[in-house]
Length: 228
DNA sequence: GGTAAGATCAGC
DNA sequence: CTGATCTTACCA
Image (cartoon, rainbow, N blue to C red; front, side, top):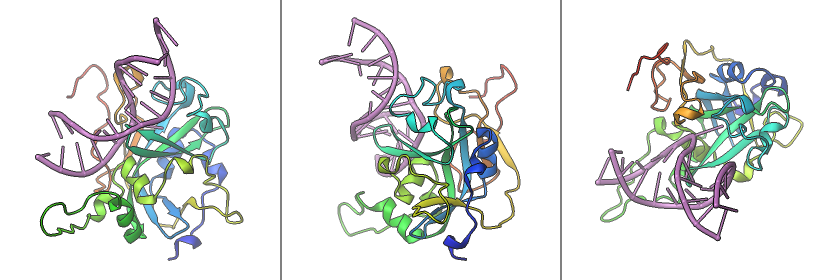
């Protein structure tokens, strides 16, 4: 049951097409060396220079540089002036593909996650302390929350998530042997404008998971049909 | 050197 | 629904 014992996903796991890697990642665990672990329930694929939604679309800018390297490395970026978002680089080296980790079901180290999610934030305010306990469900529900729960910041950009047991890795992916998730729904990706590939169905969610973020629930309409 | 938009979240 | 908050990339 110890998180450190679970078999880890190796470099080859991340070498394929980002859309396949994304779907195969669902149900697997994100693990930290301090015991924090969570099962991924929502991810998005970004296809590098072929994808207007990708930060790598404009080539190897300083920010996107990590994605042009080999698969299995962590790409962290700062979003909306407040949040960090975490990706794992995948596909063949040079293709700059990645999978954005959007939401997960917390499994172990929930106390650490809760601490990370509430520290630095004002709790209580006026009057007696309310001390509201954040629901487990909200700890990793969204890309910014997930990184906060795991303590991931820009300082972690470029970490090798597929370094293997022999190296002093701080974070990795693991397979705990649980049954694969039932149905996976593909929807359009969250937060992309029209000109950035908003219609592409590269967000993958474990159907019905309460730990997934809000977002499109269904696959994009076939054509022309405008929903919302 | 200036600026618009952005792979978001919490609170009202 | 809106405000917070600031980096990135692009234009002059």
